[in-house]
Length: 384
Image (cartoon, rainbow, N blue to C red; front, top):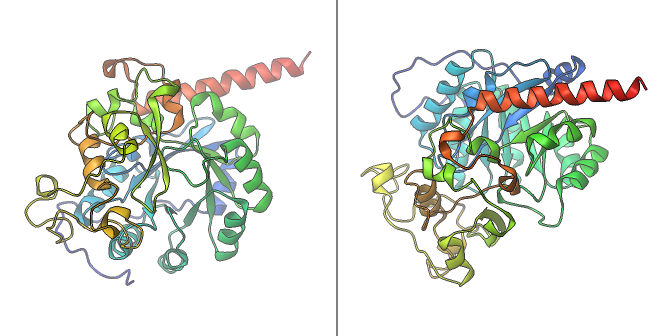
């Protein structure tokens, strides 16, 4: 991959300066100052657009905000615009890009190149393992973070040159590595296997932040909570689907991605998948335009690596088109036919109406206040 390759699509914005690097030294300096990271997770197709800059702008007494732009099924121009948008909203803030190793190899390389050219704070990668991305990041001067679900992988990433890790437990939204490996146990395992800074992720709510920080995490990652906020571009119906939900409203589905398990809001679509119904791909020209996605105009835009997509590998006779389902949820807000990936933490979201949702800044300020209160209580207990 050449990091000097120019962008194919013209942009109205001039290429901005690089973001500050979120490398190991920067994180250790933040921790030494008594603060921790509050990371906004990169979430699926379109779901987290418009959030990264708002989170990255936060600089509190106890937390440093970190925004993440999802690169999933974004054209080159779209990805560049989201990165630059976040940078404008958070001058000097930490803005990274999330990549999935399971996507089409050409798209993976293209997204990595763009992120490096744009000088993001870090690239975080999950959904598979790629040693190439670590080399590309090293050559391009961008820190690399690996999403891990075991101590073994944590040790491997440290050996390969990662700057930090995101330990993602079984309570996470979307694809989950080990459904029987909850975050508290995973965090302990990962911290015991590596000396790298570790961010705790997967089903985390404001109530959990202090506990995971006290347990040794350099920060926490929240995703579902930011899906249900008043900021961001995702459809209001998508936000509403996260409100007033209990345990019975969460479904574990079998994904088209290598048959992995994934967590989503239960609806007519997840019920149909449970019955074994099939959803072959449909035209996506309504979203990508007549030229298609990256020039791919067929109903199947080959978003995943060929050997990993159950739908494509079966000749579209099994499983479902994940791009159709996620676009239906995030862009059109189709509560019947859309796939609403979510973390288990949606059961602890207090608001019941979209009009009641807080901004990203208000969520961060609330967590800051909660941490201050808990610190005060701890100091009071220690004086008696």
